[in-house]
Structures are given as structure tokens and as C-alpha cells.
Image (tube, rainbow, N blue to C red):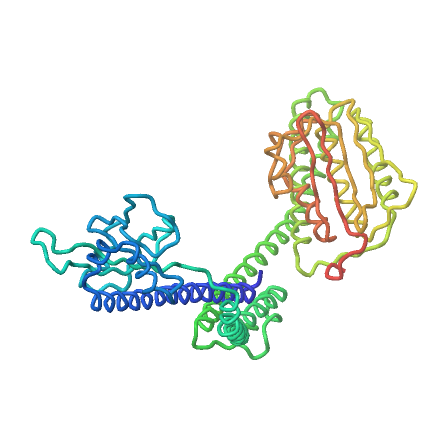
Amino acid sequence: MSVRLKLALTIFATGLVTALAVLATVIFAFQRFEHETTFQRSSAFLGRVVALYDNLFELHERHPDDFHAFLKNLVLFETDTQLYLLDTEGRVLASTGSVVLPPEFRVAMGPVRQAASTTPSPYVMGDDPERMDADAVIAARPLTRRVIRGDQPIAGYLYLVCHKEGLPANRWQALRSAFARPALGLIVAIMALTTLLAALVIASVTRPLERLTSAVAALSMRGLDKDGLQEGAAEAQPLLPPATRDEFGQLTLAFGAMLTTLRQQWDALRRLDHFRREAVSNLSHDLRSPLTATTACLETLQTRWAGDPTRDDDQRMAEVALRNTRNAARLVQSLGDLATLDEPSFQLRPEVVDLNELLADVAARFAERAVQRGVTLDAEHRDEPVAAAVDIELFERALANLVDNALKFCGPGSRITLCADAEGREVAVTVADTGPGIPAADVPHLFDRFYQARQTVAPATGEGGKGLGLAIVKRIAELHGGRVEVVSAPQEGTRVHLFLPRELPSATR
């Protein structure tokens, strides 16, 4: 989800919640206003009645039936209002309601006293004798007798209840025409205006971030080399937009400072890497000649001492020295090859070949050695050609390293199988063996440089590696735009898969 969409949803949700809150506030305020006006109107009405008729209790006691009709006449034109006469304990003595109340029916006296007190109140909610499950707006006035008793200054209360009736259909229609339609139109207009303003705000806020994101993405594609920078721009500000005075400008400056540090570190790393590769290449070249001469001298000594029983000890020592010299020569050769493959200027020489034939050539190359080890080496030939563009010399070197590694660790009776299969736009070359397998802890590090798995010594041959053969395989696969995967488990053999594209990427040609 983009930042713009998140901002839009946030603004929309905020507006919706605000609209609902305003609507709820309006409804609450309208209801409170209605209650207050009803209470004030009812209190004024009761005040006028009590002022005109100060003998209501005497009238009720002398003529109960006529008093009931008298109360109904008082609220004749107020259909949603009921009037009650209460004693001091809240008993209903007379009422205008149509519901027959049980004898000794009482209402709660707390709201009655609050409504009848001289302390001003916005409104009072009390009992509705006809609907005891709901509160109603009430008003009350204390009543006295003409002859005031000292022990009873208040004889009772005139209690008025305003029913909460539903609006009739004509009033609902009037309410909709007077409020709903204009309010709906106003809400739609406000939403349209706020949506337009939100779109403008979101665009103005996120535009610098979008430019910065595009600049960083372009920089990621071009890299930190000098050709990835704009001509005439500062080294620390390649492709970045101009810094503004807001937070996005500060972010741009922070990116510029970070790029300055990255460029300096990148240049330092490049210099160190170039020095390393050049040193390794020069060392490999300088050591190759003396090692070759040493090997030749040791082989000459072995030839001279051959068949001379007095030279048996010297023969054994020469054999050990010759083996170590050859190992050192292979190590120097591998170091030189890796240094060459790591050169940024190194270019492949790809040719489209049938990998079945290439595998057969590699198998024939190691056939005699496999027979000496008692290992079956087989190159499976598919009916259909498996064509791919590869550097033949390098790819043969990768396959040779894998087969050589498998022969080192496979004992007599084992089997090594080479095969190639087309899988969509890739080809998969597999070197599988039935050897002892590789512990799970070693598998992730097999292609690390100088990492020596399986206790560094092959159990089948007693030969040890220097941890560079498989690193060279990985580097060759990477140069071809491919990858290497290993599937292995102890006592279950090992399968090494080389996945290569059928056509080399243009960058590697």
C-alpha cells in the first residue's frame, strides 16, 4: 500500500469519524434542547395552574370525579402530556391518563423534589406511570392547603409527565424535507471539497518523497561508480532532488551525507580489492615458476634413485616433498584462477554447445582415475540435445572440479552420475554421487573460499583440499548468470546442481 493511499484512507477515516461524531453531537444537543424546552414549558404551565388554583387538594377531596375531568381539561390540547396529583409520599391520587393504575401506586420522589425545588435545573427525568420501563421529562410544583398545617407545610405535588411519543408520518416527512435533504447535500458538498483538498495536500506532501524514492531507485540501478553520477553534480548528491527547507529536504540532505560516506567506503573497498587481486595474481605468477622447477628436480631425483635399495628412505622423503609441492602448485594455480575470475574486466567467451557432449568429454577425462578408485563414472545422454551458451573452457573446469571432489570422497563401489536437463529457460547440470554425504552443518559453507568440509581429508583417498575448488565452481556459475545448489545428507550421497540460463545475460558477454 502506497503512502498516498494510506494518507487518503487516513483522511477519509478521520473525516468519517468526525462526521459521525458531529452527527452524534448534533443529535444529542437537539435531544437536550428538546428536553430543556419541554421542561421549561411544562414548569411554566404548572406555575400558572398553581397560581390560578390554590385549592386543588380541597377540590380533589370534595369532588373526586369532577376533579378528574378538571385535570383532563387542563391538558386537553396536549395529547403527549399527562397530569397527576401526588401526595407527599408519591402516591398517585388522580391522573389524566387512560391507564388504570393499581392502588397505592407511587412514583420516585427524588426527581419530583428536584423538579419542584427552587434550584434551577436544565431538565429532570422521572417516572412515567404509564410507561415505567422508560424515563420521561417531568415537571412538578408543590401544593399547599388554604389552611396550612404546621406539621405538613406541603400537602402534595402537581406532577406533569411529557411522553416520548414517536413522530407521526407527516412530521417525519417534514423533518426529512427540512433537515435530511439539505444536510445530505451539505455533507456531499463538504466531502467533495475535502476530498479535493486532501488530494492536493497528499500530492504536495508526497511529491518530494516520490522524487527522492525515484532518485534512490535510479542510484541503486546505476551503482556508486562515477558513471552513475550526474555530470556536474556533487559526488555526494548523485541524482538526488534539490533539498527544500522542510522535513523532506532534511531527509534529502541525510541521504546525501549517507551517499558521501558510502562512496568513500566504496572507493576504499575497491582500492583494497584491486590491491588484493593484483597481489594474489602477482604472487601466483611469481610462485608458479619456482614450484615447477622444484617439481622437476624432485621427479629427477626419484628417477635417479629408483631401483637403488640404499636410497629407499631418500625415495620416501622425495615422494612426500613432491606431493606437497604439487599441492602447493595446485593451490597457487587456484588462487591465480580466482583472482582472474574476480577481475571486473573479465569477459566470457560463450559458445552454444550440447551439454550432453560436454559431460561425456569430462566423464572420459576422469574414466581411468575412476576405475583406479573402483568408482563407476557415468554420463547420462539425453535423447534431445540440451543446448546452452557457455564458456567451454571455464565450464569444463567447473565440472572437472565437481567430479574431482566427488572422486576424492567416494569409496570403492560408489557411483558418480553426470546429467543435463532443460528446465524452461534454464538448464540444470547435475553431478550426483552415492558417497558418504555431507553433514548438514557443512552444506551452507561448501562454496566459501578456503572452507574445508569433512574434516579436510577425503576418507576414500586420504587427499585434502584447500577450499578453493568449489569456490571456483560457484564463481564460474555466477559469471554465467547461474547458481549452484547442493542436496546432501550423511550416508545418502550428494547431488550438486548447476543452474544456468540458456542464453547469457548481455552484461556477461
